[in-house]
Amino acid sequence: MDQSRTYRNHILKILPRGDLSALSAYLHPIRLPAGKVLEQPNEPIRQIVFPDSGFISVVASGKQERRIETGFVGFEGMTGVPVVMGDDRSPHETFVQVAGAGHCVETDDFLALMKAQPGLKEVFLRFALAYMVQTAHTALANGRARIEERLARWLLMAHDRMERPELPLTHELLSVMLGVRRPGVTDALHRLEGYRTIRARRGVITILDRERLLEIADASYGLPEAEYRRLLGDPVRGPLAPGANGRPANLRLAGGASEARGLAAREG
Amino acid sequence: MDQSRTYRNHILKILPRGDLSALSAYLHPIRLPAGKVLEQPNEPIRQIVFPDSGFISVVASGKQERRIETGFVGFEGMTGVPVVMGDDRSPHETFVQVAGAGHCVETDDFLALMKAQPGLKEVFLRFALAYMVQTAHTALANGRARIEERLARWLLMAHDRMERPELPLTHELLSVMLGVRRPGVTDALHRLEGYRTIRARRGVITILDRERLLEIADASYGLPEAEYRRLLGDPVRGPLAPGANGRPANLRLAGGASEARGLAAREG
DNA sequence: GCAATATTGCACCATTCCGTACCAACTTTT
DNA sequence: AAAAGTTGGTACGGAATGGTGCAATATTGC
Image (spheres, rainbow over the protein chains, first blue to last red):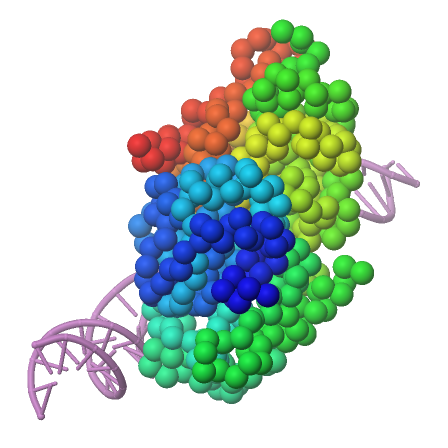
């Protein structure tokens, strides 16, 4: 009921009232400009971030130029999973991919809170598990799907986390996330554009036909999303910032994914 | 001191004395014949397994024939990570890849124990984190490394978990784990054999030159292993079964990996 | 408006990998 | 000893991807 303490981040939303009020005393708003680095490899994680908008990539690197995305976090998730699990750092880099905003809490406060309110840790661990499933599915897609399919998956995941169908992305960026050649992305985007599923303009990709994208992404998309819902519920966006109408703006993770539905249904 | 309560599984080894004695009352020995399924996709996890020998694969599947390995567990680890994190099932399949033995505990007992002895959960969560890093690195290798490199990585991971350099593996099996064609594995194995790094005979691959394999696997191998050591210490094997001499049989995860050492050293 | 920069389009060739098929060699069963 | 099953070797064309370089176009900063 206290409007100032409702958050758009879905993890914060589903926290039990008491746990949330304990946490929210330590939460402060944070801007998430594109490119902002939230966690450096092998350096202490200073803060835990709960995005409200935009999204964040986690990237693993072998040698210098062998980077690839292994995690994808938006308003449905949080950063700092290693802290939840008892570590203070990660070998991966975490940075803002598409600008947004959110709330964050200092690591020390976060640890103290988890100790005082065990319900918090329970929810965070459930997210960590959903996140693991996502990473495992990325391993599957990287190993078995062609660029076009992986690209469709990535665009769907981005779409899930954006209010609007316009995604501010360059081919170069996508090529790093997918771990492929930049011209490979250009070609694949042209093909997707040929199918009328997207519209690509300099620096902006617009989703035109999500259903068709789901078909193209095939089994690469959906399973982690269904697992997330099973573990943490449907991530329904709250009202947009003042100025937008009051309807929820994004129900996609919740219901738009027919493929994901199918996977979820399988569980019986 | 109590010989009957020392285990070869490294997680059990590093448990604080009190936690281990609480747990060991509920641990029973389990045989792990090749092919035994320990966890079915989306079905309740009945037991948590701590292998002493052999190793276990976790496999994610998209559609039917789109399977790929996303997790690899031997004497250094445990199965049932989702249970540690508050779930009762997983979308992945878990089965014995190379036969061995270990100890297991019923899921209900396991949950009760974690509640009663919080120190247990701490250690298990640290393992879960190391396991996540492994999966993320698999995503990296799948996306960016060629078959030969990925195969070298896989053989090293298997070697780490075996007492002997002979690995009972078929090309077919490897092709499923790596998510590639079977003849692709055959070719890559021939090349590795040409470099004198392995010797392949029907159903058995023998590691001849681990150092050279490390060079071939390059940055695909080592980072998760270094993270494991940071989180859980050096997994030194205990004495072999009666009949072997008393020396530790396998120090590889601990020290043989020069590449891994390098990665570990980087952390300062 | 102009220059500098970022982004995209494209082309070339080499390599890797896939899908498939078929047979040989070995092992197990009968 | 023969049959059946498993495992491995090899070959073929075609598709996908990588590495690279460069030009064309849009955007940004001045």
